[in-house]
Amino acid sequence: MHSFQKTNPRTRFAAMTLVEIMVAMAIGVVIIGAATWFTVEGTKASLRAMANVENGIQQWGLNTKLQIDSKIANGATIFASADTSTWVGGLPVEVPVDNGVAPLERGKILVLTKSQLDSAGNPTAIITNMIFYYYTGGSLAATGTLKRYPPKAPDTYPISTPIDPGTGQPYTVAQLVSQSFSTLTGDAALVQDNLASIATKGPFAHLGSTKNVSIALVREETSGGTVKSSNLTEVSFNLR
Image (cartoon, rainbow, N blue to C red; front, side, top):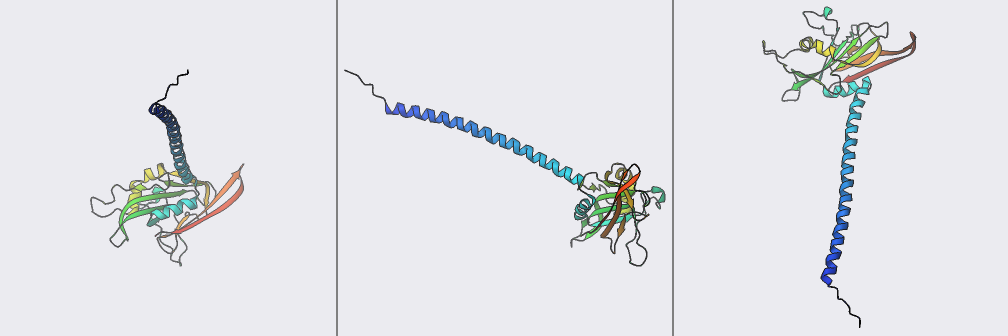
């Protein structure tokens, strides 16, 4: 006679459950590993994208930089020269707004400003941030440069002390430029080189109002002292 050993159903159920748990754990490990990989790769991609955006901002052309800056600023001032020997009373000389009658006056410094707003949303005289552009060179040889401070767009230069403690009045743009001139020019970043201005006095002008800014520059590519190509860049924008 053959004897048959009866298997307990509970034991068989327990064994199957253990196998299922082991399989589920293995699958869980794979899923967690995959999720971790995707998270790490996603973070890397995000960091690369942020770096590319910053690099892209730095590599954008003058037109794009100024259009971005014009969205940040609510005021603009143009000064005749970055040569401090031409300043009056230690302050740069401001270029007037074009009146449509006299010849258009131009300058070599453009300062875009961000001012505090009053209760009605209008800019006040209290300047909180600046963006500084300046041009070096003349109108005869394309050896000039255009530089910007802060070096990275769309960063701005924060004004830590906008009020004159002696008078209680807000510092003017000319005063702020004079106070920080060594920083603004010494640490400025190159925007474009091999430039010539179409006007001897500089590339910047106000067209009809202080918030309407015009910039005109010629960029030349040379080889062996010979001009191979010449491109005129004209940019104009209105501040809010």
